[in-house]
Length: 255
Image (cartoon, rainbow, N blue to C red; front, side):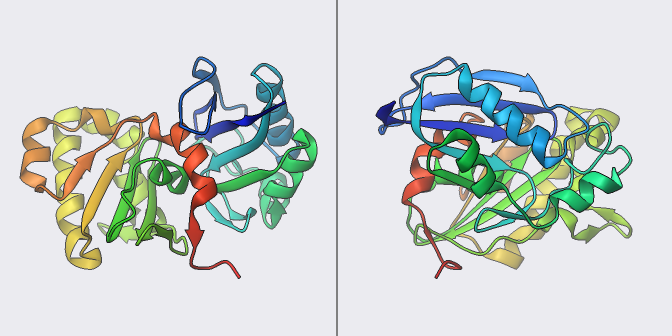
């Protein structure tokens, strides 16, 4: 076991992306991606994480970023993993019950036999890109909307902006998610992201907004320019690279 290496796994609704990094963030394995298996009760999730780890260089700790409300490594809710076949499909009631209150951090740490940190995936993503100065907001665009806030380099308590209602009965998660991008087409979807930023700016008054996730690259340059200099597009690899820096984050909600 190399005491300089961290296993980082970015768990999305559609794919689980992983790699092993040293303390400087340099990759010591090729980035790997496998489809997220469904149905996905906690036991399957933990076994899948262990299977991924077994095929990579042995690390002395692990960072897991996953969608949903995570507090101190415990899953309060996770929108995709309680479904039968993945995002936007029917809810598997048995999986939903098993996930609620599941201590993912303890379970994965025990399975891998290494110290493990489990955070919301947008929080891990943000850890890899924030400067640590001022009020920094991170949104990730992929299957849905990820969201995290950092102030002075500290991670603030998480809340699920993606579940907020917008345009009557639609949530942000649906309004700008991948399924809606496909329906609208990238040009109109990109304009919608610009509208999203314009609507969120007076609410959060950030010093800087970072937009990441797999679909961030699809935002048109003209729309990005109109968003302003306080908005920055960041590479999707931050979701994995943040696995090292996440261990140095201070948390406002931890005692």
